[in-house]
Amino acid sequence: MNRCRHAVGAAGMAVLLAGCTAPEAGDRDAEQDSVIAGADSVDLEDELRSAVTQLQEDTGIRGGVVVTDETTGAAIGLDEDFPVRAASTSKVAVVMAWFRTVTEQGREAAEQDEQLISEALANSDNTATNALYTQLGATPEEQYRALLDVYELVGVEPDEQSQGWGESLVTAEDGMKLIRAVRNPPEWLGEDNARTMREAMGASQDGYDASQSFGVGVLARDEAVDNEVYLKNGWLAEEEGEWSVSSIGVVTGSSCDLSISITTFGAATSEEGMAATSAIAEPISQWCEAD
Image (cartoon, rainbow, N blue to C red; front, top):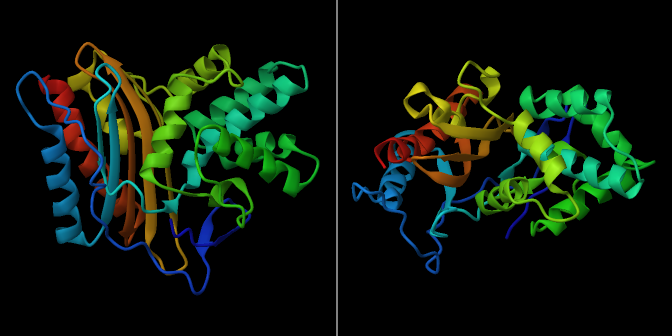
């Protein structure tokens, strides 16, 4: 995988360094198999491929998506291996690394720690994320190493040349590995800690932070009220003005039981990128409603 280098600013926003090109379109992995089909015979893979293709033809925005049916084990992967900036989806890894660090230190989350976790995941607050991140080590190098360790533990290839939580290069496949670790936590994370994360990432039907309402957030609409949805979104502008926008999450309920990871690149504005990410999520939402 060609992982370009980016620099990150004080606010956690990454910018593309000179000499690094934007990702190019690629074909779906020929070895990716298994079709997720609902009771009404809607082929979700075909619907997603149409959405991704139409998006690029109409806007030039490239999209990638991975969907795993946790009931059957079937999986769909479309353009899932091109790297984009993780931005705020990396806050999931930061919180995981924080839990791992404090567990190794023999302490538990205090009330103020839980508040920081909630603000980082539910409201995507950078200040709260930085407060957690700086507890990962005594130096910036130690802090980033702790974050890389978590990425490695969940099976994500780390970007060793980057620095800071906001600049990791990830793919839709990487996002899937991250969100599934929240769903089915490894021993080093633990179920109690993962539950805390899921609750913070939950999309309430009575209203949730607007920053989480796009992408996987569209599955939390009124039409799918019997489904539980938790997610984390991220977006940022590269040096040339193109936006990377991503969304990872889970929807569980009577209609479907899916883990989802969506990436987009090339939008001219954050709003356009969010709309593109939602356009890829829309067939998944319709499939859940129809199943």
